[in-house]
Every structure is written in C-alpha cells, then in structure tokens.
Image 1: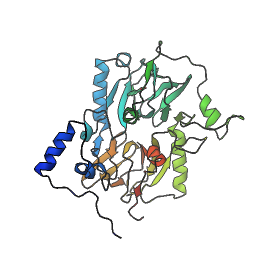
Image 2: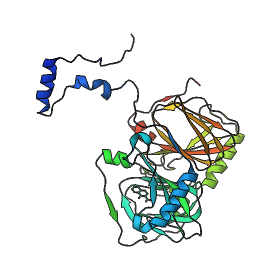
Image 3: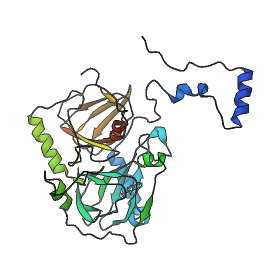
Image 4: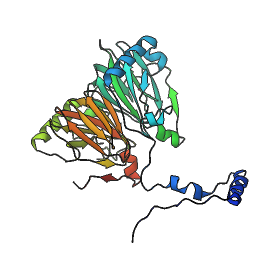
Length: 353
Ligand code: 1HN
C-alpha cells in the first residue's frame, strides 16, 4: 500500500459551472472544489514565523504610557500580531499575545472573562496581580495564571515600570462563541487571603487534608522564576540534555500532573552556552520569550531570529525549529498543546533523534 494525496483537481465545464451557480442560490456548494484545501496532507497555516525585539516594544510601550493610563485603556497592552494574520489580534491561529505595561502607582481595574490568561514577567519587580481574593507579587521571570472567569486586577506600587507578556486563548474562545466578560464596580477586588496562601496550600508538596479532585487550572497561580531557575540548575548537573530541547520542563498543575492551564501549555528550557538543538517540529505553534542569555533560532527554511534576553518569537505549526545558544540561555514558551493532546491531534517530528 502507498499513500497518495487525496482530492485531485476536477475539470470545470460550462454545465458544471452553471450548476454551481444555480445551487449557490440555495446556499449549497460542491465539496469537490474545496476538499483539497479543507483536508490538507499536512498543516498549511497562515501563521508565519515572526520576532520582536523587546527594546522596540519597550520604547513603544513607554510612549503609549504617555498617551493613555492603564485605567482608561482597561489594559495598556500592545498586541503582538502575527504578520500572516494581521488585524485579527492573533500571534498564532488560535492564540493571542501582547505586552502589558503598568506604570508606578497605576492600577489595571478588576474584571473577569471566560478567556484564560498567562503572564510572563519580562522586566520589573514588586507589582502584584490579584486573582480570586489573593495577591501575588510579580517578579522578573515569574509565570502567573489567571484562570477563566476569575476576577483579576493588577497594580504597581514599585517605583519602576513593569512589563509582562500576556498569553490568552482569545481566538479559541472566539471560535467556540463562548465569550463572557464583566467589570467589577471597584478598581481593586476585595482581598481575603494573605500573599502566598495558594502556594502554601497547593505548591509545597502538601494538600489540605480533605482536598478532592483537581480542576482544569492549577490552584498554584504564581510559579516564581527563582524556584524554576534553581530546578533547571540542579538538573543541569544531572546532564539531562535532550537533543531537540536542551533541558525542557513543562509547568504543571500539582493536583493532577496535567498542564498548569486547560488550553495553554507552558514550558521553560535551559540551553547551555554553545548548545545547538537538533531540528524539531510539532503541530503546536509556539510563542517563545527569552529570559536569560542570547542565541539564534532557525525557523522553517529561511527565517532566522537573533535573540537576547526579553526578545519574543513565534514558531508556526509543523515548521522546523533549531536553537543555538550563544550564552547560557533560558526560554519560556507557550502553545495550544493541551488542546491538541486532549483531541489526540498533537504530533511531533524529532528528526529521528
Ligand atoms: C486581559 O484581561 C488582560 O487582565 C490582558 O491583564 C490582556 C487581552 C484581551 C482581553 C483581556 C489582563 C487582555 C485581557
């Protein structure tokens, strides 16, 4: 047996064309004209490889900071739009990303929505985000979760601006026509738990005695970089290098061992100085943020990103990716992998390593 592409192109005749025109008036259309575009032999995405230097984003954001307050904007964010998907607020076909700035003394007011959000802190320290009655302090490299339908507001009592990467499943929720959102009647939500409460309850290899099953979103809502970085450093000593990824870990929900969020997989990887990964591709288009070091990433046949700390780039579905670390480097990344795994659609190609 041999596999060949499905759906050969058909011949157009005047009789066929007249038929197509006639049935079109009844909202009918022949499948044989579109089958090859609907069911492709491999992913064929509008999403393109792209990259952003943080220094460019930073200056545009500071300019935005002179033009509009966090309160007036609701969220002062510049959206990272994929060049192949302009005008749609998408960084990949099904994910949204933006960079948010909160200036000293500002509050981004409380609201909630059915979309899930992740934050990855790029620059700054000592701001907070409040989720479900608890504040957590945001420091560089921290990965923070806002679960669906959770009240959330952000504030920056520090004396320096804070910048973070927002990742949301907005296009997924849009596709499912399941968006709900509302605003709280006060800027900051009431706080009824001390800082660190969720971490102590769920993030210390302990669980409250009578805690039962886990939800889809991790109850640990801040994964501090200091701890993540320490784990990577200890694993470095174990020489746990993967040819395709260096040393790559996924953030988990400690109750279930699943991904920390239902719709977005989040990952962190250490690439030691001089390490070059083997070519890898997977069906989950992935957004990367460098948090330490510098290097070069090859995407697809001809896209090259020279990145350093805080730079951002995106790898489309099924395009080959190869990283070269010039210095010891750490990359944070996120993708729709949990959705693809749940639907048994996730595929990867490790190039036989
Ligand atoms: C949102 O709620 C935040 O809470 C950031 O910081 C970006 C983009 C679209 C819709 C809601 C936030 C967002 C967002």
